[in-house]
Amino acid sequence: MQSFGGAQAEALADKRIVVAIDSWEADSAYPAGHYVRTLGPIGDRETETEVGALRSLLRCTVGCHARIRCTRICRMNRVSMVRKAVSSH
View 1 (spheres, helix red, strand yellow):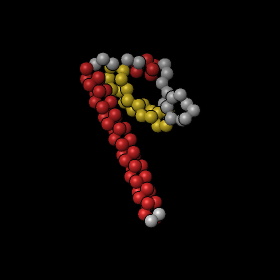
View 2 (cartoon, rainbow, N blue to C red; view 1 turned 60 degrees about the horizontal axis):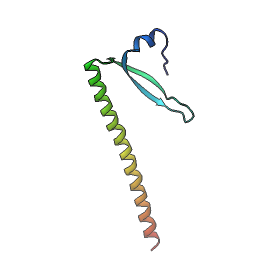
View 3 (tube, one colour; view 1 turned 135 degrees about the vertical axis):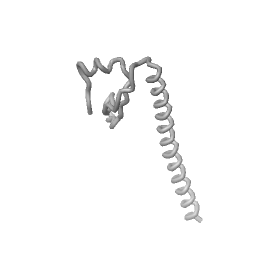
View 4 (spheres, one colour; view 1 turned 90 degrees about the vertical axis):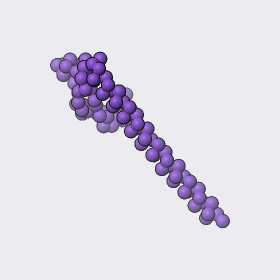
C-alpha cells in the first residue's frame, strides 16, 4: 500500500488518478489500495472524457459480476429445490 504525503500529495492535488482497491477490512472506514496511474489534470477535456469512459466500464464490470453471481446463486437454489422435490416423491 502506498501513501502520499508532502510533495507527492501536492503534485497529485489537481489531478485525476486511478487507484486499485486491494482490500477493505470490515472495521475500517477506508479501503487499502495502491496508485495505478495519473489520468491528467482535473477539468481537462481529454482527462474528463477518459474518467467518464472508465466510470462506465467500472459500472458495467461491477454490475456484470453481481448479475453473474446472482444468477449462479439462483441456479443453485433451483437445482437444490428440484432435488428436494424429486427425492420426496
